[in-house]
Length: 515
Image (cartoon, rainbow, N blue to C red; front, side, top):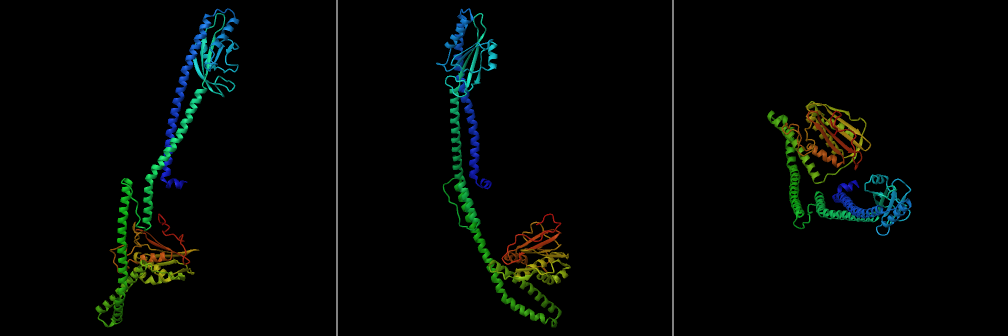
């Protein structure tokens, strides 16, 4: 779900729209509900107070005009007043006439189940003040037009009784069942309308987002196909809006990209064909020149010193030229995808020691020592193309000696269950930042101004990398200025195997970051 949420912009937009619209609709609904409930209750309160004022006027008028002289006549008068102002039939409210000093002296209408008047309200009325409050009726109290436990408005006022009887309090209880039902209906309507509105806003957001996201998704699919090499893919252009202009610009970009890539591919094909043709065409004249140079070199002792030296230089430069020509032919095979492995069971430890022995004259000339303490003396058998692996090792050793500044070169070989790893480290000039990504490039040299008396063609590491990849292995580099460079070769022990981890680190133990 987290992945779908992060990858689908439509879901995020719709969810955000639903959330924000739900918050807004809820706030508006609460405000409207409050205003409706307040308006309904205020109207009911005004009407109730009007009826109560009329009832109090009638009751007080009859009490003031009464000439009752004993308690029995007063009681009959009070009961008559309650029945006269009763709202059981016409108003749907209850009347209670209570004695202030005698808790048992009370008069009611609308049956025997009576609602209790709150003490706070009675205390206010006893202080000769008219007051009102909202009360919750108990489930046993059934006022006219009510059911369950509704809310009611209780209004009270003091009454002056005839001489000789205590003061009384007159209370009207107006049930608010109808108003509660009205407010509940409004709330349900607002809730339903809010849900419908939120869903409609979500649908609108989904529709609008789809109209915007669909071209973007189409552009992403087309871009993926372009990245996969299908350069003929284009976006459909519909209309003249911003998205249409985006599609047109994208198609123009794809067209220019296809044209430029085609030009680069054609140039690359021409370069590869030129390299292959020149390499092959030079073979024949080079062979003839080599034969003549060999004759001159064999007879150099009979020549004058300057001619003998020229014969030696000619042979040495022909050796370098043949090496360069061989590298160019090998690169052309990789470019043509014509390189193939010929794996055999090889003792890589013996192979490494043999290549070390072959490079020792160059190391002695440069003043370097090849340290092979890290190479096991026991056989390490691997299924590889011995010629190609020997070439990789030779290139790594020669490169380390040439750039080692006369310091020791360390060689280590470690065999694991599924892979074998070779590491060659020098302590010379090292690699500057950014050069690790360039060191395996064709014709790249770390120091272009360096004398090329022993330097190679610049193709050695490029060919070594291709040889490693052909085996399904790794060839990696590490280096820092002044701390030397390290190259690590990791190969599967069986032909067709896969390398998933290296058996030895690339960077030295004291390096800040292990590559």
